Every structure is written in C-alpha cells, then in structure tokens.
Length: 327
Ligand code: 3EB
Image 1 (cartoon, protein in one colour):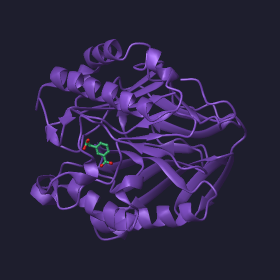
Image 2: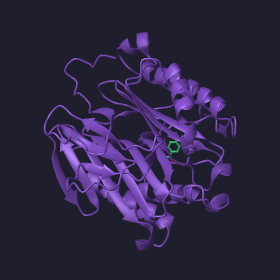
Image 3: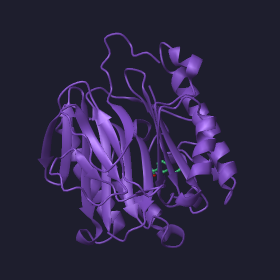
C-alpha cells in the first residue's frame, strides 16, 4: 500500500546474509543472528542468540529516512530517528530471582523508559528467552514469563497492547532480551477474526494470558504482524504436522492482513494484499527449513525478504511461527 501523502515513513526492515552489519547513519537497528556476539560497540547492534535455519549468520536491518541518534539509559540501549525509536533491554534471570520477577522488572524498566521518550507509543515487541517450554503445566517457562510480563505492564489496557513475539533460544544463558519499536504517534491494534485475542485466552493456557495484540497498524498504514502460528480461536491445530501448520498459519496471516486493510482509509493494498515486505519464520526444527521456505513463499507470493530462524515456540505442539510486515 502506498504511504498516505505527508505521513511519516516508517522504518523499513530487510534481512541480509553475513554477520557484519552495514552501519550507515540511517540504520536504526541491526539484529544479528547465528553469529558470535559482534565486537562492534554500537547501541544499534543487537546480538540475538537464535540460530538461522541454514547455520549461516544473518542480519535484520531496520532503516529509516534520516540519521539515527543512539543512547544508553541504564539497561536500555536505543536509537532514535524522527518519530521512531528502537530499543533493546537485556536482563539476567539470576539477578532477579526467577523468570516472573525478571520479566516484571524488565517491563517496568521498559515502560518507565518509554514514558520519558517523545516516541512513547509501543508498536512492536520481541521477547527472547531460553528454554521457553521447560517446566510442566503452569510452571512452564513461557507461562511464568507471561505472569511477569503482565505484572510489569501493570495498567496498560489490553486493547492498547503492542504486536509481539515470544520465542525460545537453545542456550542456557538466563538472559531475557526484549527488543521493541516505538513511535511518537500511536498505532492501532488489529485483531485476527480467525483467532481469539491472546489476552483473552482461557485459563487452560496458563494463569495469565499473553500480553500482545495480533498486529499493529501504523499511522502510514504499514501493518506489523505478531508472531502467528497454527492457532484457530484459542486452540493449536495440526499438532506435530509441520505442513498442515504452515498452511493454517498462512491462512491466519492472509486474514490478518485483510483485517488490517479494513481499518485503513485507502485500502490500496487490496490488489496485492498477501505480499509482505518482510517475512520472519521461526522453526522448531531448522533442518526442514528449505521445504518450509518453499511452501511459505508459495503461500505469500511477492514477499521481498525472508529470514528463517531456529527457535522454540511457546506451545510445545507448535512447530512454526511466522511474522510478517506489510507496507
Ligand atoms: C499465539 O498466537 C502464539 O507471548 O508475546 C505469538 C506472538 C505467540 C507473541 C507472546 C506469543 C506471543 O499465542 C504465540
């Protein structure tokens, strides 16, 4: 969809091969995957401890239309350009006595920082933690994370929650890493008609439902989708069947894009609505990535940039999660 005339251009995300990000002035954030922590001392470079599916390093580059200014504020590293801010916070579980307390502290810090910024509105959040499926029942680490995140977010109204992702690393580092994109103008949360709002999930998925919206619509009509999986209503479908989960997820993604388009004034995206500018795929088993990638690209024709990562998904039966950005 063409940007609204006069609207602020949002940052553009693209994926690259290699482990050394090109840090020209317009880069807002460079997330490095599948590589040793970069030695570059730049607040924009974020090492994400997730492997790529092909085992080679990759970089997720967020570019803006002007020079970014960087800063550090306590545990928060950030870069700002115009209306947009990209932040990253890394916090250790052993410093806070467990995952719920760590997540609560992290989100308090995040919100407190954000409230001081002109770019105070959260649009999109990524949560990276280790061993996300460890623990039984309500003690599963993802559910424990959800408890703390919800406490830390405090009074934030469910219908204002940002789009999100929460995935698991394979290391044992005890590091909770939260990355986010924020703006001076609020986005509009978008629901998916095929899926219940996650913040309304019934009790069976844990004591505190997950705090995220299905997608965020930016003032310029860009649509940022949350991690999307083979969930219809609140139920996981096709447990253990990757091909079927991919198909269900693709259907969810197409429906999500349509829901976003219905909320835009211009609806010019309708012609080509299924072509996201960026597609990020999390696979529980990276070795089957090439078949999965072929199917995903066939289902989202015209996608410009694709990244396949190996990660654990927040429900054990889920094998794939996909996040899309539509411009
Ligand atoms: C789901 O739809 C799948 O806890 O932040 C997707 C995106 C999922 C974000 C989160 C979880 C989160 O419930 C899992």
